[in-house]
Structures are given as structure tokens and as C-alpha cells.
Image: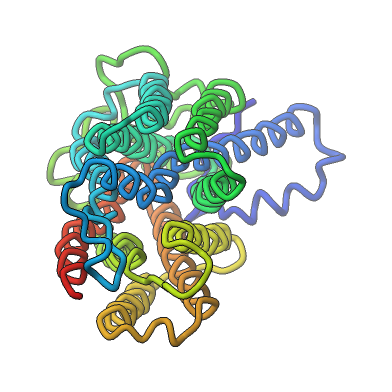
Length: 437
């Protein structure tokens, strides 16, 4: 029997844990239910890992992509004209290619995504992820490479809104496993790219190795996950209810008024009411990611230590890997401690971005030593990961059962909006500093 989603406001994740103590004495069907539950938790962790992997790898490879290709094609190269050892094109260009398609998908998807069965969505994610690795690997020009990055963005954006909506059909603790998996994608994606290139593989061959990820995404969703019968999978619905409570009612009985869910689409007023209730989380999360990716794609490439044996590209890869390590730790921490006030994390991240911007402008960061910069970068990742996982965990706890699928799909636009704005600002900042001699 497939476990049905529990509304966390009435039955917390700890309820499940308390019941797990007497597994040995449980009836066979109850033990099978628990095995199915853990199988789904594992599937969501892998879905988070696979969904964000291509996105992370493209950002980790951004400096290599631009450095290699601008050196081949640019008639004018500012590398020797600036103390910052700049590429002609900012890595923020890769960020924009990696995030703008996601932004478009997330803004428009709540209007139509519920009409598309989940299996079609996931299949498209798999195809576009594989295409992104192929295109960037065999590209000989920066424009073609950016097209490959766009495919990675389509896969990641469609996947995030799909899998976060999918959590509404399962127990609420799958959100923490999904978030941990996305954090795992960060550290494993950045670390695998760093490790392969440090081992001597070319960036092209390193990306070809990553083709194992779309295959793992296929296995995680179509083989490992055990979806409930109410999940719209292959058949296009003529009148799709956002949540079918007949197969998703909580284990604890509720009043009949709470059990019933709308069988038709919500009105615009209803949707706007839900969105307004989420703004207290969405706005701080957008600010966190704005500051975070302004640092990542606007300042990382300018934080250059010229008097060490590590090359500029290698330094950039290490920055990305350490940032993702912080993200992974904090995205996996929600079961240990929870944060309700996301605005505190937003203030800390903005303060950190301001400090690093001043450091780049006045060139005092090398005086902190490279290990000092590494610690700052890990702290930045901790803030970003904590903001993400606590935002969606809070929404999962506070949303009504019939609203959760829509709320998750709407809220996931927050980080993407912040990232997009940071990319637009990072490019002129890069150009300004790289014009300085």
C-alpha cells in the first residue's frame, strides 16, 4: 500500500519516526508501506541530485568554457590589461544562459503545468540534460556552448517545478530529502568536475563523463519511485484536479470540510491569495540568492591570487566546490534544526556580498590568505542552502493539503528571480573592474 501524504501542520514527520520503532512487530502490509516510504525518500534524494547536477557543472565549467573559447576567437583579449586576469566575457553570461530559461519556465508553468502528466515532464528533463552535456562537450564556439547551457537550464527549471509539485503526493518529509539531494548535486557536481580536470581530463571529456546523470535520473523516477495511483502520469487530463484527496487523505481523520479539495481549477483571486501568503518567504529567499550569485558569478572570477601555483581557472573551480560544500551541509540540516525567519539569512548574505565587493575594489582580499577566503565561501554556501531548505520546509508545514502542490510550484520561482537579477548586475560590474589597469 502506497503511503499517503500527511499534512505536516497536523501530523509532523516525527509521528512517522515514532511509529517506526515497532517495525518488527508491524503487520506485513504496514512493513511494506514503510519500505515503500524509504524507497520514495531515496528516490527524491536522487531526483534532487540529478535535477541540479547539469546546472551546477555548467557553472563550475564557466571559466573554462569562456577562457578556452575566447582565447581561440577573440581578437581583443583583456587578460593582460587588467590586474584581475579577466576573460573577455564575464562568467555571469553563463549564469544568465543557465538561469533565464528556468525563470521563464517557473513564471509561466503555474498557468499550464498541471495539464501535463508528470512522466512527460520528466522525460523532457532527461532529454534536455543529456543534450546539454553533448552540446557543450563538442562545441567549438561560445555561442553554441551557451545553447548547451540553455538546455541544462530547461532541464533544471522544469525539473524543479515538477519535483517540488510532486512532493504534494507524498509524506511531507520528502521535501527535506529533495533539498538534501539538490545540495548533494552541488558538492558532487562541482567536486566531480574539479576532480576530473585535476586528474588530467579535458573539460570536454569531463562533461561527457557526466552523461551518467541523465541515466540515473531515468532510473530514479521510472524505476525507484513508487507513485500513488492519483498521480497524473501518462494520460492528459480533461479536468485535472490539483489534488485528489481520495488517495491522499492524511492517516489521521479530519473533518469532512478539510478532506474535500477543489475539483476544478482555482480562481485568480484564490491563487493570488496563496501567493500573498508566501511572500514572507519568497522575498527573503530571492534576496539571499541575489547576493549569493552576485558573489558566485560576479566576484569569484575577480578574487584572483596571482602569486600561488594554482591557476586562475583552478582557483575558480575550488571556489565553486567549496561553496557547494556549504550548500550541501545546510540543505541537509533541516531535520536537525529549523529556521523560520529567512530575512535574517538575507541580511547576512547581503552583508557578505558587500564585504567581498569592497575587498575586490580595494584589492585587500589577498591579505586574508587563500584559506581565509575559502572559509568565507563555505559560510556563503551555508547561508544559501539554509535559506532554500527552510523556505520550502516552512511552506510544506504551513500549506493546506489542497494548496501545497500549487504553493510549491509558485515559491520555486523565488531563487531563480534573485539569480537572474544578480547575473544582469554582475556583467557590468565585471566589465568595470576589468577595464581597470
